Image (cartoon, rainbow, N blue to C red; front, side, top):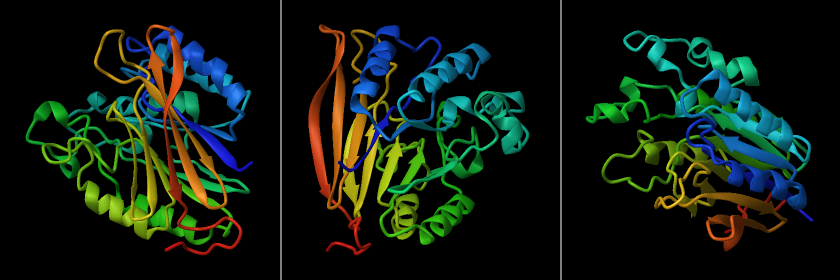
Length: 281
């Protein structure tokens, strides 16, 4: 049967939330019977208590069908509390921690997968500098300490475990030539490849995409926050991991039927087979 997960990024609870789309996801997930549901950041619009409460209710609903893995995104970093002064991670994510706990990059050590996170959302930072000031709060970077932690955890992974990194920013950005929202994304991508990553689950770009670079499958699963009539694909992904293949299914929202429909299926050869840990060519 393999191992499967549902990847739902950028829900934007608050002004961006759409009840029809949320209800559809809640109804579909039990039918998929996934092992894990992944929420890869931007669960809120303005990091307000009411938005976090709605996100927590959704996560609890998902937990009836699967384990729920969640990390904060750029919308959850409350940098505006001290815009001109450095902030520690606990204070920057105080409201997020209130509802989802102190661990910002949790690790799920499961029989068939080792899932861990990378915190790329930090608010305005010199490490993610942009000439466009309005982009500063959106841009992110991958800290060296996160890379070292991921590499160390994957080093100790069992051969049969698929090594999955969850992060908010996309390592294959759509707008890479003009102003990528992940600073030094090529360097970050190379480090994750070197760490032995099999799959990266990310979002932020609001455009669904599926890529494979250096043997790493990258699922960037759009958003649930697109308004009716807007030119924003509303989507989520389902990932199925088997012995020799990683399959990514793309589900897009159809406004006419008010339902999600599978539109694309991507299949990739695995870097490692589950049964023996060997690398494919």
